[in-house]
Image (cartoon, rainbow, N blue to C red; front, side, top):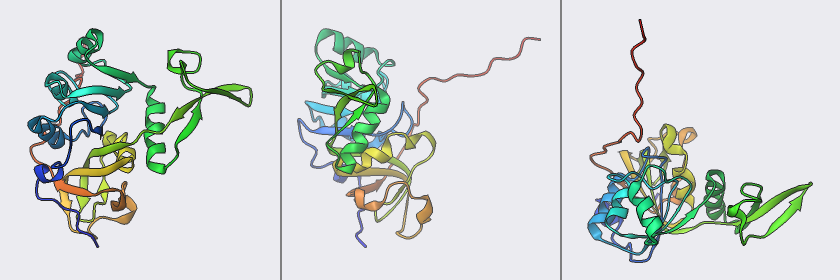
Length: 235
């Protein structure tokens, strides 16, 4: 069995290049590849196209890459928590492709499955459909959407083994599993790295065949994007 472990995040990301297309997993700030993002900032690679459900916040996640002007284009579904993103968008510094969340997920899944295009009703009759082919099926209109693939996919898992098999936890399963299938090189960072065979096969979410490199991450902040607390009841 192939051992896919690399000794560090530096080794895992050594060949990321200027102008690359990257997928970055997670949902909000949950399940994002924190170590990979920090290394991308340290490397200073630029003119990146980043595919992610959202763009982080101003001082965390992909927001830090926006602060350092490394991102040329964002392909996302939600960007409402990032003031710097808004500033760069309105000033014309950043190219943006906003996609309905379900369509974004399916385009990534299609990329991993080798399906170059599919039809979806989401966005028909809105600006989302401008310039796209539309067809009628069963008296309903659908838009043709193309797959999404990337040079590198960076995903974060709860547990992984030396063969690259991954287990996610909770909301981290929203985009990480499909992104793991859609990158030419998939790099997984995990909280716990185990020997091959230690994971229950019935619990594995991403089979190791999709993962080229895996390393054990360090110092996860796991920040909460919007902290909401229950107020004391009025007596």
